[in-house]
Image 1 (cartoon, helix red, strand yellow):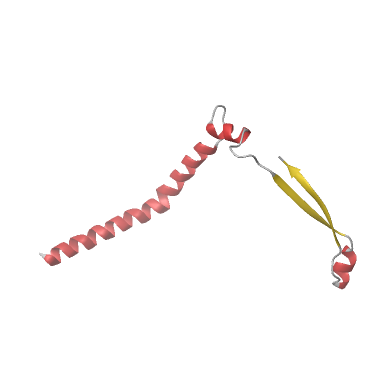
Image 2 (spheres, rainbow, N blue to C red):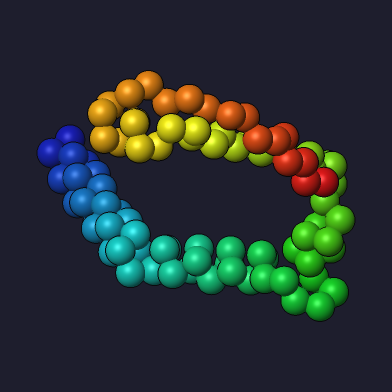
Length: 92
C-alpha cells in the first residue's frame, strides 16, 4: 500500500512539474505580456492615460551636468579633468 502511494505521489508530482514547465515556456509569458500591455496602454479614457497626465505624486526631476574644461589634456596626457558644474536643470 505504501509503495503504491509513493509511486502515485511521484507520478503526480512529475506530471505537475511537466505541466508547469510547458506553461512557463509556452503560455504564461505571452499571457503576462498581453495583460500588462492592455493595462498600460495610453488609450482614451483609460486609467493609465489619466495617471500619465496627472501623476498621483508630484514629479520633481533635477539634472546636474558637468563640462570638462580641459578635454585635450585629459584624453591625450591623462591629466585630471577640470569640471564646471552646470545646473541644476529642474523639470516639474
